[in-house]
Length: 289
Ligand SMILES: NC(=O)C1=CN([C@@H]2O[C@H](COP(=O)(O)OP(=O)(O)OC[C@H]3O[C@@H](n4cnc5c(N)ncnc54)[C@H](OP(=O)(O)O)[C@@H]3O)[C@@H](O)[C@H]2O)C=CC1
Ligand SMILES: Cc1cn([C@H]2C[C@H](O)[C@@H](COP(=O)(O)OP(=O)(O)O[C@H]3O[C@@H](C)C(=O)[C@@H](O)[C@H]3O)O2)c(=O)[nH]c1=O
Image 1: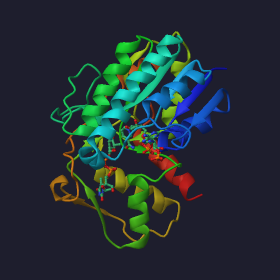
Image 2: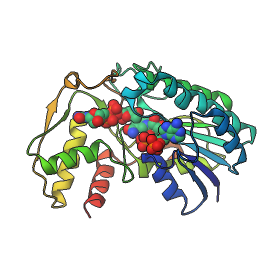
Image 3: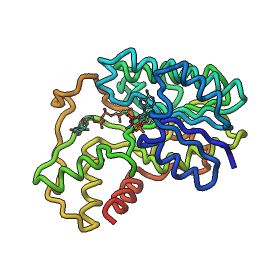
């Protein structure tokens, strides 16, 4: 049994971590009301008062467009606070597991990114997350940075819920068909990341998403197909393709291709993460059960 402190415990990933790990471990789950990452002095006081072997940071400024305008807040929460957490964990010989993103990449590569590929963010969100990664990894070789992408899970709606909800209400739905990445089940990631509770598992940078790339349109179409199989009264059966360039509301530039290669995680787990299709099917079946 490990003593695990989770920050961001009411987020899409943090809530899944808290629920799953509490079954076997001693979990302290902290959300923004208890702990605000933008108040660095309060953060230091509170984290110093905690008892933990593993500190997990799933808190972040995750609104990609807002990060472009609220730049200082994004820098403090996604980078400076992470450096502080990494130092505090290292000082007590504990491991930090910090969650990062595919948006550290510029998306110019045509094949899935590996951990050693150069990161070149297009926007401030990606830049602050990259800065956070570097601060975390510099503080201790035992710390872990897990990059995820297109997260979905039962604790907070995501793109998958949005597309299914639209298709329940409308005869026509559309999604971006010229942007590629690798969806990540929050619940699966809780299972993978538990491998790092063992101090013998090497620290460092890992890509931690479900197996296989897809476009946003393919991701949405598969979610609709799975919802139809459950008998859900879906009106729109086809997700119509639209180009990324048509998303006029997007403030930050989005990378075109950020699928993540999971070979390094596979070597830790002894098996590849299951496919994104299986993980989405499982999620949709439970959503409509
Ligand atoms: N969602 C996605 O598709 C992706 C997410 N990621 C990364 O995964 C991690 C988890 O994201 P996810 O769970 O999806 O996102 P959520 O937005 O669901 O969760 C982030 C949590 O951080 C909390 N938070 C934000 N600012 C602060 C603050 N100043 N102090 C304390 N808590 C704060 C939020 O609190 P509140 O609820 O009060 O706002 C929220 O609960 C993040 O590091 C993100 O960068 C990476 C790639 C893709
Ligand atoms: C893909 C898509 C999104 N949208 C909307 C939904 C939402 O309001 C807005 C932004 O969508 P998303 O949040 O899915 O996209 P985005 O903000 O780009 O999501 C990112 O989140 C951060 C945290 C990450 O780290 C990235 O990996 C990525 O998943 O655009 C559409 O209307 N149609 C679409 O086809």
